[in-house]
Length: 266
Image: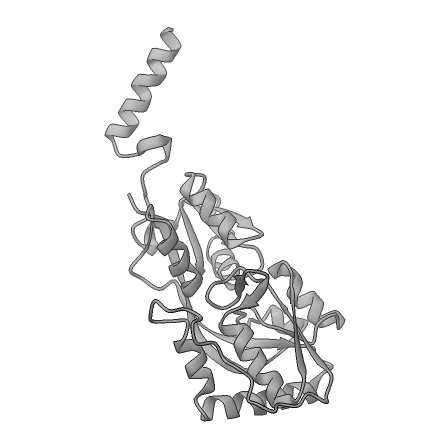
C-alpha cells in the first residue's frame, strides 16, 4: 500500500508539471524543430524523413530515432506516448491529423523535396519515354488536375483520372512498385490502390501504350524491386537522394512536397 501511495503521489506531481496527460500519455514537449533534440523521433523506415532525421541526429546520443515499417505505426506510437514526434511527408501527415483529433502539425516545414519515379539504371530507354510522357502531362494540365482532385478540398478522389477513350496498349505492361499507405498519393479504396501517384502512373502508361500493374510492398523494398527488375518503376512519394542514386536512376520531377512534424495536440 505504501508503494502504491508513493506511485500515486509521483504520478500526480508529473501531471501537475504537465509531463503526463490524461490516460498516462505524456504531454507534448515538441513545439518547434529546436525541441526535437534529445527526444524520441519516429520515422518510416527508408523514407526521406528517415534520411533527413538520421543525417541530423544519428550522432546525437541523447536523441533516439525509432523506425517503423508503416507511417501509421509511427503515428500510433506517438498517440501512445512511446515517441515524441513523427517526421513524415506533408500530405499523408494531414490525413493522419484529420483522422486523429489528439494530433497536430507543427507550423513549420522540416524539409522541402521533389518527387520522381525510380527506374533501373539499365533502362535508359524507358526513362526517356517516361520523361517525354511527363512533359506532355505537365503541359496539357493533366498532372495538375490529378493533384488538385486530392489536395486542397474535401472531395478526394471523386473525379479520378480516366484513360482517354480508345486508348490502345500494344506495348506490354508497366509494373509499378509502391507502398499503398501514403494517402493521398497511394492508398486502398476497397481492394483497389488509388491516389495521385496511381493516377499519374496510369496517365503515363496511357501515353506509352502500356497496361499498368501496381504491386504493393514495404517502402524499403521498392528500390530493390526496381533494381532487380521485379518492377519497372518505383512510385511512392519518393525523393531523389544521393544514397538512392547509388542503385537506381530517377525520372524528371512530377510533384513538389515537404516533410513536416506531427506531435500530440495537448
